[in-house]
Amino acid sequence: MKLELGQGKNQIVITPESEEDLWNLMLILRKGDYIYTRVLRDVSTKNSKSKERKPIDIKLRIENAEFQPLTGKLRIFGVIEEGPERFGVKGRHQSAYISLGQQIVLERQEEWDEKTINKLKSSGPKGKGLIVAIDYEEYAISLITSLGVYNIESNSIYLSGKDDPNRENEVDSLINDLANRIINYLSKEKANVLIIAGPGNLKDKLSEKIKSMVNVKIIIDNVSNGGIAGINEVLRRKSIIDALKEFSSIKSQEILDEFMMLASKDRDLIAYTLNEVYNVAQLGAIDKIVILDKLIYSIDDNERTLAEKILEYAEKTRAEVVIVTEDSIVYPILSNFGGVIAILRYKIPRESFKN
Image (cartoon, rainbow, N blue to C red; front, side, top):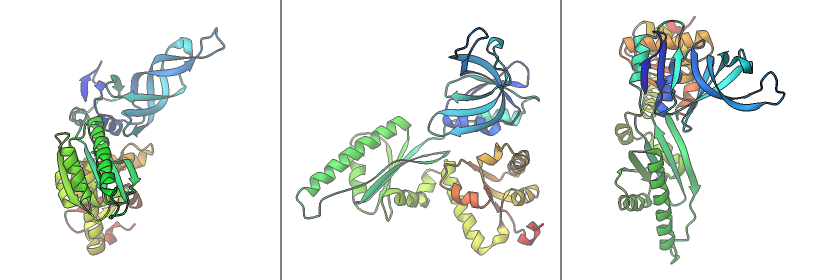
């Protein structure tokens, strides 16, 4: 993320350079902030009845923002505060799409605090990994980033019977085809690690083929299934967690697993929902926390304030904080717990959470 101060201490000039930058940008935006940017809009002049799509420079008062993974874009929605007078756009609603490499100016009514500026300055890509789960019936290829896990491709595999003389050629053809597609994905996504897993020897053949074609770090693991089920199994393996421990999408699964274990054994060591977690956060009791990003940029003032306070307390007490998107593998379960879960440093009786 490129960042410099603008005109006055309430303006900053930002150029996002990675999807992580766009995501972190979304997390710090507040309703009522302003963005100076260029947008495309259908406009007409006073003397013209027809409209024409033109690029115009505007000042947009932000109402909400939406991160769009794997698109390299952040959508910001708001009301035009300033724009070319001849087009009469002031006061109109407008969406602005912020792309990688695009310079924008952000303005806040008060000065930008040092903590927010440092967070943006430290933003950057955390690396990507590709996971392949394959058996003799199906395969799946998924991309794992610090923002989530995304299924790229999955399909069934049809091979002749073991005694069929064509089977070996079919296997070779399958391996060659998959190896080429995987290498293309590695290049396109700039992934720096490849995990190949499965129950049989197809994973080993695929690994050897890829090793003969490109130089990439490959981790091989045994799982019970190919396909999406195999991908999900891989994401729960300690060896993979250790290899990809810098990815928040992996960390969130690890913390969730510990949370679910404690939920069945010692419920006084966990908290969930915004109100519960806020209460324990004030006490400095949080050891680890996973929270949905949508709570942090929620348009509901109370919801967003609670989320921001939770993170503020957690960071002050050096708790492990993991923020995840709706694309994360933990999203469905996390939603059932109100979008936030916490593991505590010491026991707090659950009766104390009741109103």
